[in-house]
Amino acid sequence: MRSRVRTLILPALLALLPAVAGAAPRAVPDHADLTGPFADGPAVTEACLGCHEDAAHDFMKTSHWLWQSTQTVVGKGSTSVGKINLMNNYAIALPSNWPYCTSCHAGYGWSGPSYDFTKAGNVDCLVCHDQTGKYRKFPTGAGHPVYTPTAWETKIWEPQDLASLARTVGKPSRANCGACHFTADGGNNIKHGDLELALIAPSRELDVHMSADGQNFSCQECHTTKSHDIAGRAMFSSPGATTNHLECTGCHDENVHSKRILNWHAKSLACQACHIPAVARENPTVVSWDWSTAGKNMAATTDSLGMPVFTKTKGTLTWARNVVPSYAWFDGVSAQYLLGNKMDPTVVTHLNRPQGSRLDPRAKIYPFKVTRGMQPYDKQQNVLLVPQLYGNGGFVETNDWDKAFKSGMTAAGLTYSGQYGFAGTESWEKINHMVAPKEAALKCVDCHTGAENGRVDWLALGYAGDPSKNRGISRFELKDAYGDLNK
Image (cartoon, rainbow, N blue to C red; front, side, top):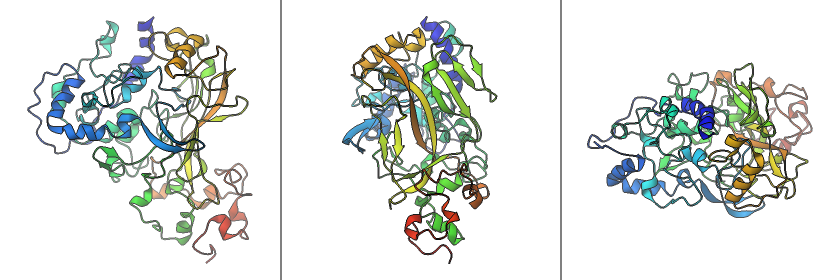
């Protein structure tokens, strides 16, 4: 049974693992003395630590290593937040699914709740620094690059010469970062909408900053790094991080436009709102995930984009291209659903949600990708359930929800009543990438159409209607702190 499950998920995942190299390797110290042979990933790290022990200890202080940090959470005060206690409506949760989820952790062997985060030998140096594009971590191997495959798996998993990979190390490329961030939750562009494999070598039309005929930026150009601590905080995993957010004004002057009306708009609008008119412009992204159909005996189907609509192990997915963002005020803080929180199954549960309002001086209107889902909850306790999806006895293998909830909730340190149903959820991902060339930025009429069902939901933003249709509206209501629009 277990080999049958692997045949369903591993070939597809391995095909998605990108080459972890981008532009030509940059000049680095000669590592020719790393002759090996190295039996496994930790052996490579041991050799790296011979010269770079401080680097490993610096990295072990960061959220990329810990996957959590202490933050102020709306309604909960100061608490530890991260993948250990967050839920999403994609792969749902980390507990009980460690070997699968942690294949994207920059370490080795995180296969359960007792992982040793203090052991420098667990740090995976190659995943960020390999420049050959040949380094791979087995999709269900808890972050290990060395794996003993079954007979059929030898067709999809080739042994790696870790010594030759170690001798090529350099500064991370876009593809190094994208090895995890572009294929989050199991496939290309599934989760974010603005992060996908096409960004390894994008056209100027797809991303003006990263294209070879544009700025050809590496990720570190914006996500500046000091002592292995990478600037920038994802809204979902860092809901209380009001500092260390990256903004366009870090490089661009706030009054960068030649037209005053555009600079005036920028007091209330984030740059991304106009300069990222749509996401998933190259490849589709998931906009809804219905777990309630998983396990049913329905025929597997694909949509007009060639994407899988129904699979027995995942349920029903809806894909879309050229997705117009949803717009909301955001002041740098997000509300968050944590494991064990109470929910109301009769309404949509917001797994996270940007905070801010029209009258909040800290807030601006940002674009977001919103994903809607149907996921399991406990009918007696009214909490979202954590299933064991992968591994021995997991849902992917057994199609038994009850068994998956028993093991999953136990791993999460929660109880399960034995009664389950499915309820609607919603998650918000802040859009920052796929910046279009300036000639493709939104124009006035794209938002100010006068139509009730246009690009912008003015009522949701706190307006009575399109403010451009009412010149008598006060400057305070428009958040104009710098003068009259008509001048």
